[in-house]
Amino acid sequence: MSEYKFAIKSRNALSNSVHVFLNILLGVGSVLITVLSGSPILGLILVAISKWRVFAVRSRYLWLNIKSNLVDLIVGVSVVLLSYYAGASLLAVHFLLMVFYSVWLLFIKPLSSEQATLAQSLIAVFLGISAASIATSNHDVVLLVIFAFLIGYAASRHVLAQSNDKDYTLTTLICGLVFAEIAWLCHSWSIIYTYGDSGIRIPQIAIILTIFAFVYNYARQAMITYQDDFRFKHILAPVVFGAILIGVIVLWFSNPIFNI
Image (cartoon, rainbow, N blue to C red; front, side):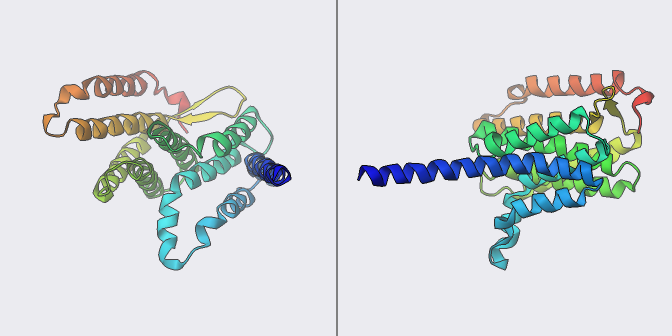
């Protein structure tokens, strides 16, 4: 019996080691292969291959599987695109993306608590909007609007799917539409903050929509908690703080030298 338990533990240890190795390989490899090849195609293929289980189902479950994994797909695709648009030579931002994506795959993605689910959604919003904004800066605004809608929809659905609220289709669509509208408005002055030669570029719209997503989720949770007793005072603090923060960013950190 002891030998059997030892064999089981050994197999589990080996399985865990392989799991960690493959995730680190994906985290580092998706960024490295994008930079070395000078194209996002191989990196995107690597991310798609890592999600083979999403597509290895019957056709009637395919769309449900895709929707359930949209946040993870958005993060993976965003990491590859941000790596590509940062440049063809290795910079500090590439190493940061390697570390972050590995941490995401190993520690953040597996979490399932309410707080972790919200954090995952906010990360997807920040990275997804950053990548979409940079990638579509020289294209028609329609592309950014479509991507923003998809990201808003996916982030909202990711949070709501973990809650007890099963009728969330309308809520997720509304969130996607608000994201699309804000993206359309912000496209007129696409501001990107850069940090020296590190390759780090943060679009202003990504910060604004991340703040909005946090306040939006807080307000939704408060409405569910208080129901008939809900008052605006229950969400006053985060709404005011979010509005002030966005106002400061727009009014004092929109210097034209950041324009793309």
